[in-house]
Length: 435
Image 1 (tube, rainbow, N blue to C red):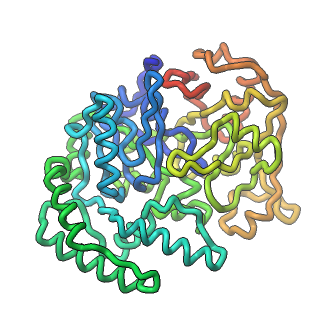
Image 2 (image 1 turned 90 degrees about the horizontal axis):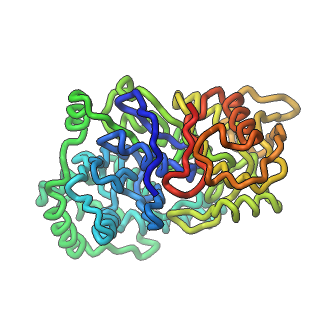
């Protein structure tokens, strides 16, 4: 399962961003393009990302490491905007090493990135329990992401650079633990400070050559003409600002997060590729206008194997919603789209695409920000004939069934961005380039 031969992308620095609610298949595109880019960088989120890559029948799941890690020539950067749970990082490195992939020499972690501790994960569970008592659960992955960003934003966080100044780290950690114990005393919450500090002393030794000033290095590499691929985590509809708040993640998962999460200037990122699943899925709670609650939704879920990489939860499924993707394209400035999992639609006689929302009988000009409005919109659909043939072996656009080509072209027309890449199956090489 070698990678498909792809046309070289002109731009030196590109970003790959999810255009829906995550799970669009970003990791696969990153993997396919990593050979064109010597550096792959993560800018936001934490171990709530979940990318699965299939290489020669072997499945690699990475949650924290950039998807480019599978490519032995690739340098991988975890930027300042990421929150990192070190035990998870170590486990991923060890699992890759067991498969014969040596990643440690190629990994660089920002000295400004924040450390996500076990206590943040415990707090995630307790906060979700507090919320669900009032019927307001977000459905988080309980990976501690929100609490780690809370520590960062309230300026009590601990950064990777602190691991290199361990005396200071000890003081900061003890202070953080005391604060959290006080806040969650009703849950009888306790942190074993000495044991944790001892654990982190070991981690600090193992990571001392990995922690660097990535802001300076990335800009230095860019100046030397090295090619950089920025791998977005989560997706724009989960963005803290632009997503369906409060059913969102705690970071900027849109292009802005790539800029602030790496320290690369906005004008350095010359091309943004939006990853769009050929239908829509969502994990956890929150609004979902094109959701299919009946048999068609179940068929999508089954045919698309829509189970979360991180959570193992069944994903909610529905038709493609181009109101969503027009909105996220506007925010991110997509130059190309990667339409993924087109093969999942091969089972349907007719396929629908949502293209407009009406509210109180009026067509809305754009995606509404208020959940109450969103829960009451009626979706306008167009219906297209299906192709009902297996397309997983197709590698050239002109070999796709005419109905599949018409579907792709309708998506391009409704979103206003060309589809450059089309995913037609789970394998690494199951990718069609449309030029």
